[in-house]
Image (tube, rainbow, N blue to C red; front, side, top):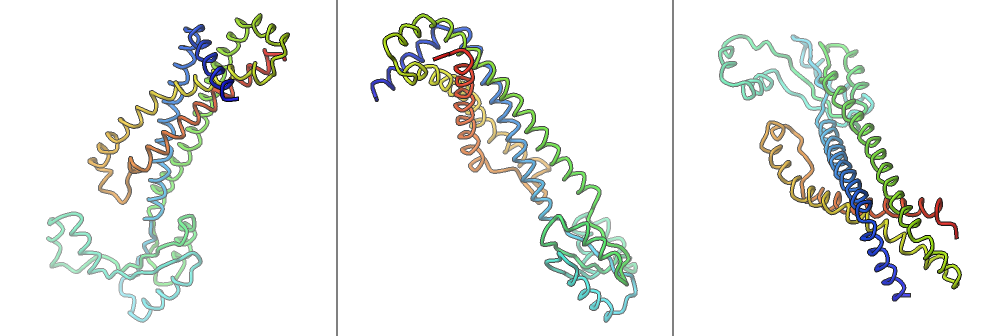
Length: 295
C-alpha cells in the first residue's frame, strides 16, 4: 500500500515534468487564480469586519426640545428604554455636548463659550442588534419632546450596502476564477491521459486495479494545485503585514475600527489557499478522468 503510494507520487511528478509547458501553464493559472482569490478574500473579510465594527459603534442620538422640563426629560428617558431593541439609554447634557464639540473641533469653538449654549440635551440609544437601528430611530422620532432622532442613516446605510456588494461580487469573482483554474488543470490531466493511452491499456491487460491506474493522475492534479498555492501564500505572508501597517498609520486607524490583525488572518488565509489549491487540482483531475479515462 505504502509502496504503491510512493510509486504514484513518482509517476505523478514524472508526468508533470513530461508535460512541462502545460504543467507550467496550469500552475501559473492556479497561482494567478489563488493570488486574486487571496486578495478578494482579504478584502471581503476586512470589509466585513469594518462593517461589523461600524454597526457596533452606531448609536441613535435623540435630541430633546430646548426648554423641556426636567420631569418630562426623565419621562422621555423611560419611554426610550421601552422601545424594542434598545439595549442602553445614556443621557448627555448640552454642557457635555458642548465640551465634546470643543474637544473634537478645537479652541475655535471656545469663542462661543460666553454665549448661551445653543446645543440640545441628548439621549444616546445603544441597540441590541444593529439591524434594529432604523426602527429605533423612527420610534424615538415620534415621541413627545423629541426635536429629532438621528444615527447618520444615509452614510451608515451606504457603508453597509457597499459591504454587502463587496462580499457578493468578490465571492462571484472568486468562484469564477476557481472554475477557470479547474478547467485548465483538467486539460493538463487530459493531455497526460492521452499521452499515456498505450501504457494505460497495458496496465488494464495485466489486471491493474482502477485505483492503481487513476492514482497518479489524481496526485498530479493535487500537486499542480499545491505548487500553484506557494506564491500566493508567500504574498499573503509578506505583503499583508505591510498593508496592515500602512492602514494603521493612516486616517482609518483613528476611527473606531481597524483591519484584521496579521496574526489572525495570515494562518487562516494561507491554510485556506493551500487547501483550495489542492482541492481544485483534485477536482480538475477527477473531471478529466471521468471524461477521458474509460476504465
